[in-house]
Length: 57
Image 1: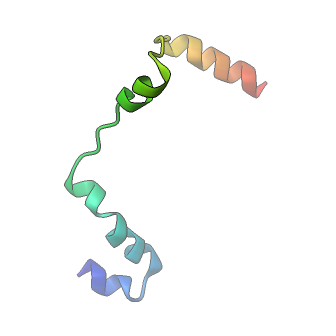
Image 2: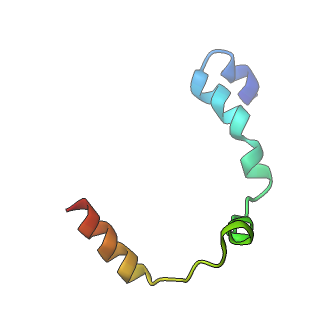
């Protein structure tokens, strides 16, 4: 049904193309990055937010 609507509505056509993302969850990890670049030290959210705000200013 969505494909049929997609014939006339570009937004629904794009939804059909991206629908596979709803079927299987995507789990993001930094494993491949760490294999190539080494471990990334964790930082607190408060520190990251402060750095972001300082960069915007």
